Image (cartoon, rainbow, N blue to C red; front, side, top):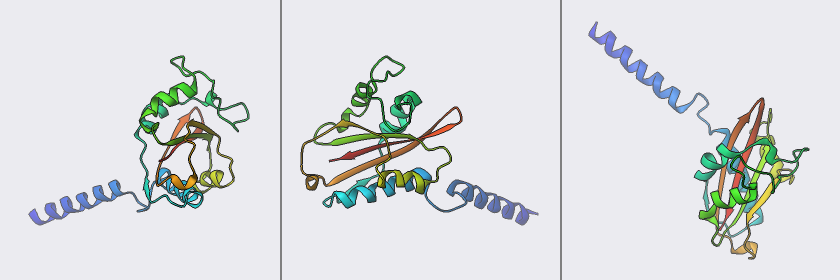
Length: 171
């Protein structure tokens, strides 16, 4: 009896661990997209040696504030002058939210409707130049001057649509 209880407890522990690690054993969709975007950027920025896949401000303040009206009607561009809920323009909001990356960095924000798209299809938007972007900060330096890259990706569902949000920081 005692042995059966220990075996059941051990089995429950293994099952709980399996749930925490995920069934596929693979990476999350956001991480796959971030890695694909980083690979694309490294091709055009040959001196990038250090890559990070975390932009905490994206999954926090930016994701919370994002609204579909940041995109133009066709969904092909971002409206720099659209207003956020607190009355700031999208551009001012992003500059305030991503201020930590302003010095010596070029920062881009991307957003698009990704409803029903696979991680691969979302990544391909960057290859094809079809990911609507807004330049938040820009440094006039040679592309070879950048040695660090940060890519943050998250998704936000609004109504029945799923939006992919990306922040890219080159330093």
